[in-house]
Image (cartoon, rainbow, N blue to C red; front, top):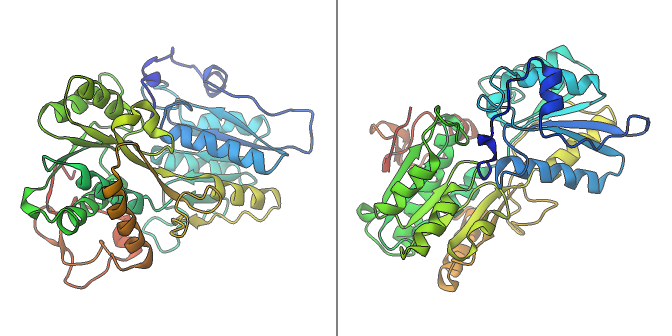
Length: 403
């Protein structure tokens, strides 16, 4: 989720108040202004990480640009590496004591902190970015009316990025730098593989057996020295062993940084960043593109409802705007094209995106098997939202651990 900023581990806070005051915090509220609506955002990594956390931070600025009386406070780097003895719910307590009426928790790791906060503060609106506690048709519905979930349908962004990777690979070896293993990450890796497989066969006219797609998991959303695999080393291992396109699935830009070094050393490599629209900026010449989240519109809608006492704890699965994929006001998922996307492959990719949007290309459709050969979807069967959300294993054809 950032360019190594999370590695500067501060001293361990002794209380939630200490955590809030020692974190990288942007105090944009004015206590004397009774008309302001105070919101707060708790970020698992630094707000300038070039990835997931920065995307949330920029979404808060989008909201404030749209609604002048909304102000955000931020506490970032709330994770076991930077703050090993601090719970996100404690940080939320402190922010609420300072007047926050809405709290955004931005990591899957915060799901129980979000629930705890919602129960403890029933008059505060709580948004958990990811998670399913507000999904009435999900497995984990909690019926907590002041707790909502927001999660864009990134499986489509991943299919697009997988297609782009396959269009540009000359070795047929695509690497995926993965975070930790859960339903969400298995879903997104599998979606990437399906996009790659489709475009490898249909546009490149290649033998499916000649496509190698491998994921290596580091163990968390970003590097925690001593606790995770080093994403720098994993990236280098990919580039040094014939993987000429590497996709990032973590929140920091090691794939881009090491890809740039590999290219400068003469290797013909390219990469795809993840999570933030400007993710190609680290190494633009070798960046094919970046699938990114656009949190702003959903946050704007939910904050407006909270201000009007109409917040009901919705489960928001934000969809792409297929007619205008990069529309900042309407598309929850975007794909920013990079300089390394060739004009010829851009045409194929545009055709692929159109097919996803109009339904002519349906990749979560059987027959599909899990890695161990057991059926995921039977012939002609289309996955339900629940089957897509609760992804219990990687798909057959992907090299890498499922658990």
